[in-house]
Length: 229
Ligand SMILES: Nc1ncnc2c1ncn2[C@@H]1O[C@H](COP(=O)(O)OP(=O)(O)OP(=O)(O)O)[C@@H](O)[C@H]1O
Image: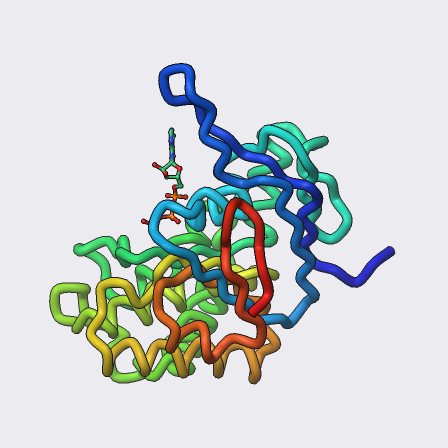
């Protein structure tokens, strides 16, 4: 058994536009160990979101293999993929997707309600949600609704929500894309903190070299493959 939490082998992904084949990912390989924090940079249209959707089991490859903990994702049915997604992955997007009628604390607990029909442990879920919000420096914002939070605060709530089910890998797509420079710097330092203090594996796709600079390994997506910088 290898110690890679995630492995991509000879991934190809293409789209057809009219009769033209657009080869987006072209023999892409990647290995990530538990606890690593990597960033993926690349110019617009280079395939970053396509790659993240594949890593998130939201899109399929045309050929090649994707393994989580040695499990070949190609061999799973849809239900098994859903279970793997819930067990392994937390997502943060450019937009926070918080529900406006719920407080910060309630928004963070929501994934547990979706997944878990037996909510006898609601108090422990709330406790974990408030601990996460405290780590993300939102201790005094637990009962605020999204309209009462700043952009950076909303994004930090979204990060806490992504972590509530203890995902093995946190996937983030342009998490600072909507934020100003100062707010982005704060989010960058929190990603670093989550990685170093909690050994959280993180994969972030970004245009921001500042965010890439807090990661341990910076890859560039070029001509459909990843180049380590
Ligand atoms: N469903 C699709 N059908 C056809 N082409 C697609 C489809 N989805 C994405 N593409 C094309 O694939 C390429 C890569 O798109 P992708 O969104 O992955 O790029 P990106 O690097 O994330 O770009 P950006 O930084 O602008 O968000 C683009 O040229 C896009 O137009």
